[in-house]
Image 1 (cartoon, rainbow, N blue to C red):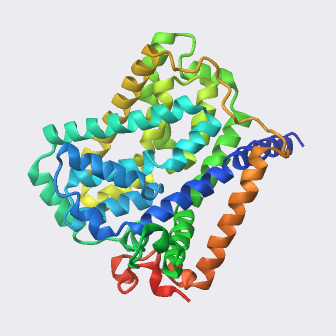
Image 2: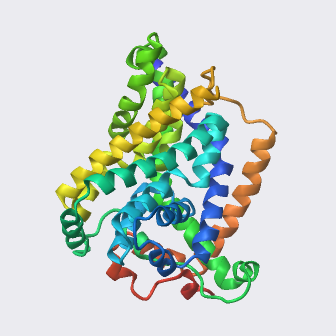
Image 3: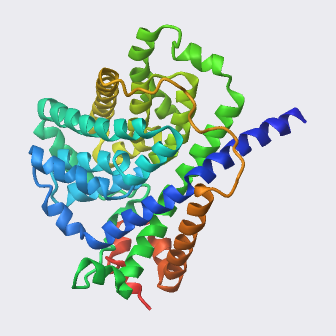
Length: 393
């Protein structure tokens, strides 16, 4: 009976966190779908031809408006690289598309507080800058050439079919007119549902792991593991160990935010939370994809530089926020089992779930399921399906 009670408590915590963030997920994915329905893939590639600061800023902005699924981001970065984008710009796009997206910021605010959302966006810029510097100093042209040769083999990986699809619309007119058109609604619905399909596994896994850890792992363990009783050591240790915990958790994208909330309550440093979230592109399945996409030498290079950049971002964010006294003093992230009551969360969930239902119905009525079946395929499977408007009806 105690085992059932423990399992029930973990599921209760998971359900509570899910209820808190549902509307934010729908809002974030809807906004992302609108942007992706407007901006064509060729336009993105043409803007990412070098590694100048301006280009990297554009890459970061386009990434922030793109997919929040880590697997799709990795596949899309390779797609851009194969079509002529600079490798540094493609990786900057990849980092931004998982760490600077709007849905991530909203969920951080809901579960951890606005300070963490601000730290995430500042740290994301720092991480991209650190990566650009590391690439400029350490990345050799021969390694990039070898990576391009491997990338051009087109070996399929997780979400490769999704990355190959350009579902932007071709309708002319103002932004409002294009989005209000039949083709626009179809494109938004297709991107919305496919983005959910891409990230749902990680969101569910992250919530389940966070609920289990919150229910079953005592705070005393985390306090010892994160050296809570040694403040200076904790600040040094947090950003170093945060990415390691992320690698071993197998949870990427926004699915690791609930686990970050559990770690914060357990005692990890502020900078450690930031570096933990930034390591979503270092989990073991994605490291395997790097090897398949770019070869083992580039995979090793990406592993080392992404880890170093996430640690640097964690340290600098900790220092900056400590100087301006914005690091929260309490550790009460929202991982407790709250009751569902008639409040703003309930109202927003109803509104955005209705919006999601409208988009899902449009998806089902406009050839979406057929495109969904091709999502797991490679680029060759996507020929003739470059935008969702092809399935309007």
